[in-house]
Amino acid sequence: MGKKILICDDSLMIRTQLRDFINKLEGGYEVIEAADGNAAVEMFTANTPDLVFLDVVMPGRGGLECLRLMKEANAATPVVMLSSVGAKHVLKEALEAGASDFVQKPWGEKLISSIIERFTGGA
Amino acid sequence: MFIQYFGSYLLNKGLLNPDQLKEAIELANSTQIKLGILAMNAGFLTADQITEVQMLQRTMDKRFGEIAVLKGYLTDSQVDSLLKTQEKGHLALSQAIADLDFLSLKQLETALQGYKNESGLTNQQISAIQAGDTDTIVRVFLDFSDLKAGDQYYEFASLMMRNIIRFLGELAMIEEQLSTKGFEAPVMVTQEIHGGVSLHTALAMDEETFLTMARKYSGLKMDAGSELADASITEFLNLNNGLFIVNLSNNGVDCDLTPPEITRNCQLTTDQGFVIPFYLGSGTINLIISPVSLG
Image 1 (tube, helix red, strand yellow):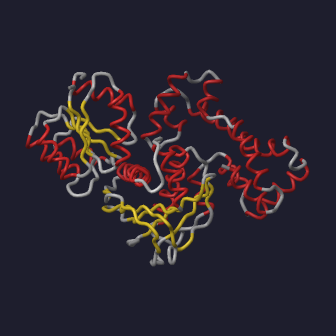
Image 2 (cartoon, helix red, strand yellow):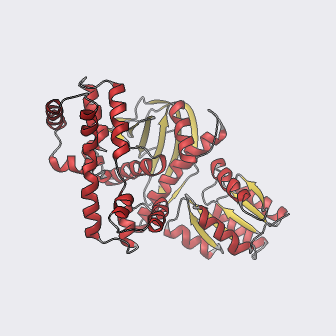
């Protein structure tokens, strides 16, 4: 099995689009998904993913709180924020909390594949 | 953009029937040329540069020409020259109507003058509509001049109009806003913007339009009433509001969003909000803006 990527987003549309795209990439990445903040933290600790895509606005725990908890659990795992809210204060807070990168929705395929390559070194 | 307004006038006056208008618009749209193609034709941009600008346009609330200038690919005067060429595209509807022999040139001239007189639009406003200038269009058709937060309402409506063009690929026509009191909708997606600015926002429509829009936005296959359809429309509102917040942030105002919610068969009771109908070829999307909760 290839590297493991955790997608945390309450939107089924975003999860479906991203999962379909990652599944098309060469190398056979394993995609796991969480639909809210609580599930995101649980899946992170239970599955030790190689890369996380994390939404900012989610029901339950918000993305920034999830990010802090993930960093406490394993600071080495890269977490990339994926959000429609690319406002300066959100960017600042995310980077201060340890986010590895920030992607403004709607995401582009080229950008996502380069992020995956950069942080996982390929599957 | 002018095609929608003038086309609607021709329909309401009985000068064209719906089938004739549809045929004329299809013919006219097939001859409308995008700025990127005009720039490539003029030797200003390469295909790779056009693709790059289009990709950036998906994440920035800026027009194609603005981004091309920011990237140093086009100068302001080149953009002006291309826009002038593109503006002539609105004549495509008149050309199509004449080519299809639906109206004579004399009848067209009279109709165009009649539209100008009845709409009360100035030549400058008509030029703005022809150029697809959404900031001007919302101020022509909507009136929030009595509201303290009126400018934000105009900006929000203008952004939605641009995003409908960008992400749904449809030109939208708007008319005067309505009150939210008593407004009913089969399905409505809501999201609150809070912080430096407080706004309750929503998109409401019928189920058929909802599914069409969801498929267009996501590019995914889905069934009516599916979770994926709901997720697609909530994400579209989320995207619009995210861009609105980025614009506010760039002006020093920090805001956040609540997760979007979806409700069916709703009726609004507040009289403090506004419904702005966006008429698209595939249905009507009602944008709702309110200073108070819509729940």
